[in-house]
Length: 300
Image 1: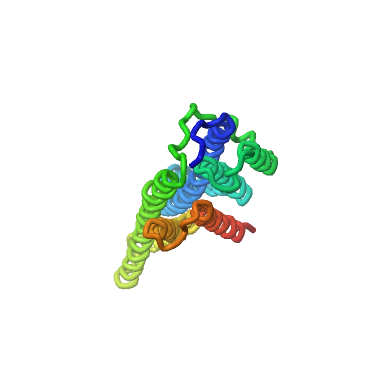
Image 2: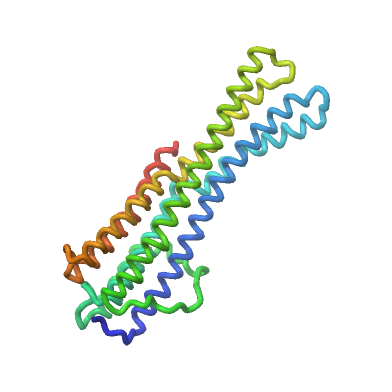
């Protein structure tokens, strides 16, 4: 069992983990807002451009104003996209990686397993902390405004409490709820895109039969632009990939815990904790690498 007289070393690492986690969260929110803004501007430009064309003859002033709005929206799309560029995504993933590494080290230290099972565990912890800070030194500035109030360390003092506070909390409090959120988001986007496609097909069929006396043909292009924007946003957010990854990781952790509790393996404390952290780490690395890969593929 680990010594539960917690020194300041692990408390310091835990507080810094909170700052890196907050900085990572803010970077992710900025990227999401930028992608949503770019999609909204694209849709707005399509709608305003079509309205300007249809209203221009009867209401020249209104038509010109709408045309200006459409042009301005198109000009702002690349600016909004810059906040979700490959560099922004890469910075966010590095912030998240440092945060997760500090979290993993904290839990392993508190559980008293390798590499923190010896009498020099405080020195090992601080050495690993220094190495992480050196590797991510260019991002440290982003964490200075993300300082949080002091928070208690996780209630972990051995591997038994590690299972409850780390493994089970990751399953019930993070991976499963996140998988459900991703599934709902992906479903909403699919339904919206399908609805717009069906509507555009119905309008096209109506125009083909009755003619275009009301100028509906132009709105088919708008529906296509909106559908493209929705699909592009969903693709950038990786909802379906995240759903699969989160659900898979929750299942792996649950099976690992069950096997240990049933006496079917993983009886060695150090090996068990190492495997649990490996599963969590692979999940983080997998979906972050996927986001960087897809974002890079979308760049010119």
